[in-house]
Length: 251
Image 1 (cartoon, one colour):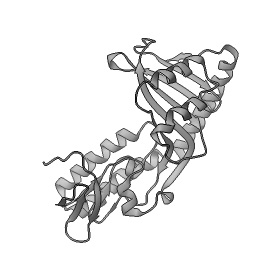
Image 2: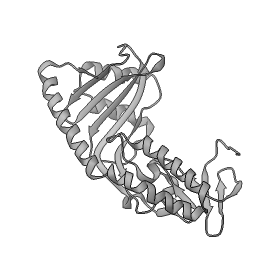
Image 3: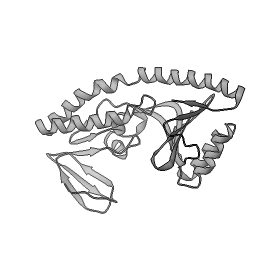
């Protein structure tokens, strides 16, 4: 299998028995199938189905993740600082690193430029525990955090012609139910199985029929329940934080 790095898709034509793809270096590739797995803000999806307004379902939250050297030596432990509208969580990584994740309420869902992300996170955590603010300060020695909105992607179809979307590009579940990576891997496996057994167009239909029930079970009703539960937990922990101004170790 040929692999090309450092190029992106600029155009495609899937109107006949093959798909013809133009890459950013000017070269053209002809294939039986074009697979888009370029995340929940998928550029290929926009080319295929138009603007994202029709498929985005914002949940009203943003998230940010980054990692730093671990000053806590958490090992198998999990540390959470919660307050109304904002949750900061920390997990130990290999190699003495600490993963930080922030989730907070925000009605806006537009992308945030990398150079604006640390400032946004500092504003969100302005009244948080001092350790939360210190960790953000440590993170600024590295690259900007990954920061975006919690948005469900809900498409009535995942393919058109010989072009198919996989993973978050097709059915982003957000990090709330914890099923995004698993569903993306399952999608790729099912598609591979179907392509090995039948022609491309039939395989795409079979892939959709097999996977869609699992995606539906994880959204939107179940996601709403999980979000509601997270809100209740965050509010309760927020009350405790105001009393003692300390984070809680949670396993």
